[in-house]
Length: 133
Image 1: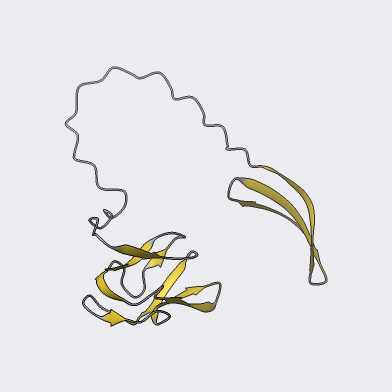
Image 2: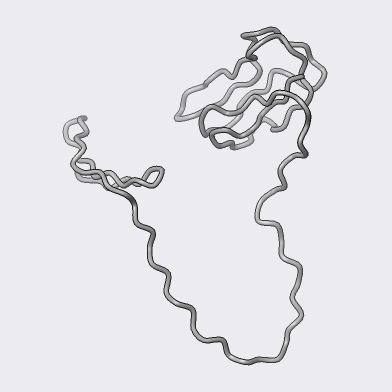
């Protein structure tokens, strides 16, 4: 079977047969063309309701070193809370990505200043998870 996969702005054509994938072609992804909006029609002014936020607001910046997600996934376990002291290499959280659990470890001895995400949170690559001080 042949598939087209778009990943990070590139489109890949892949053929999969008997458990083997063969890359057939690779090229820059092209965004679909949006239809031009119709000319506006004059109408009576309407009061607009305040717009709902599109996404939750980012947590306020906290002084310290941020430990970020190395890949997209779901936080399945948080082993620390604010105020805890941690040793370098200690597991701070567990991230599930592609059905595998990945341990996010403390880079060095530190104190947990703030935990920015909760268990069950979906995170992207580079999302701050914990602030160390």
